Image 1 (spheres, rainbow, N blue to C red):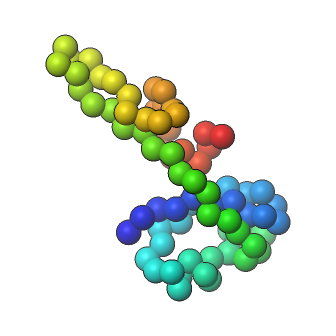
Image 2: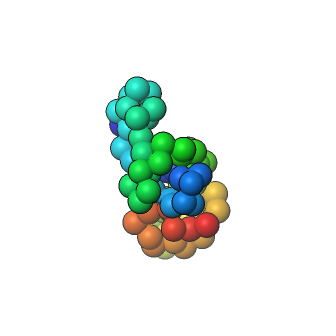
Length: 75
């Protein structure tokens, strides 16, 4: 089940949700203001791999060296 990022169009609050189905997504509301006027955001990702020399390198498309547990705060 994917975790999606959303932005409330009423109060600009960003949040993430684990969404099990399209029907569940239609029922989502902003956790701050309870508005149903939300928009799915494009998510970025960050990954690391070990190099042959024992170092690490970033596999991300935009976050270089990010150590956050979530990309929701990286805007």
